[in-house]
Image (cartoon, rainbow, N blue to C red; front, top):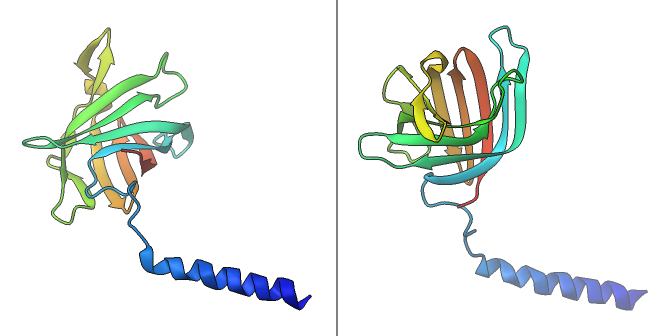
Length: 156
């Protein structure tokens, strides 16, 4: 019985030597711009769950005057006839490179309808807050009065 224990201790000691050669995870972004994949929940004004989804793609794209958030094929309510690609600008990544805020109090999102980006004035975006922590993006905002909570992992 002593031989297997000695071999296990030797093996564990050898594995411990690799700790000095730890390399950064290449999947953790240097900044928060890029693509994310995650889960979301959308709640009605009364707090009841309206919709939730997994494998939700989101992209944060750097712009000149402001940054833009894209969410691909998302539904905010079961009553929506189809999922939509949406985007909205007026987002700014703060100097700390982890806090996102809107540059205005409200903004009008756009959705792809019949192949063109179309403003959706009834779905005003407000109360936006976002945070990037290591390789994750967390978003909370109102869209047309519904609260949307998103948590995604960086993919590229």
